[in-house]
Image (cartoon, rainbow, N blue to C red; front, side):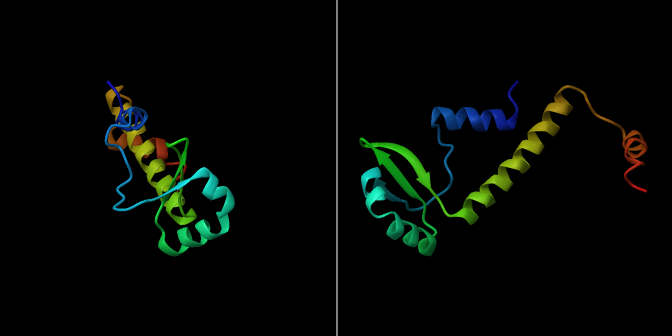
Length: 109
C-alpha cells in the first residue's frame, strides 16, 4: 500500500495530472533567460506568474517566486507529516489517549 505522499510523488514522476494549479504560465527558452534574466525576474516578482524554462523545446525547469516556493515547501512538509501518520496507522503504531498523555507528560509540564 502506498502512502498518500508516495502516490503524489509517483504521479508527479509519471506526469499524471499532479500539477500545481496554475491558470496561466509564461514560457521562456533558456537562451532568453540567459540574455534577459533581470527582466524576466522583474516580471516574475510583479506578476507572481511562474515561468517554464525550456531547453531544445522540452520543459526543463520552473522559475517561481520565493514566497510561492516557500509556501509550497510548507505544504509539502504538512503532507509528509500526514503521510507519516497514515503509515503509522497502517503499521498499527498507535497509542490510546491515556498512553499518549503518559508518553508526552515530560513535555507537557
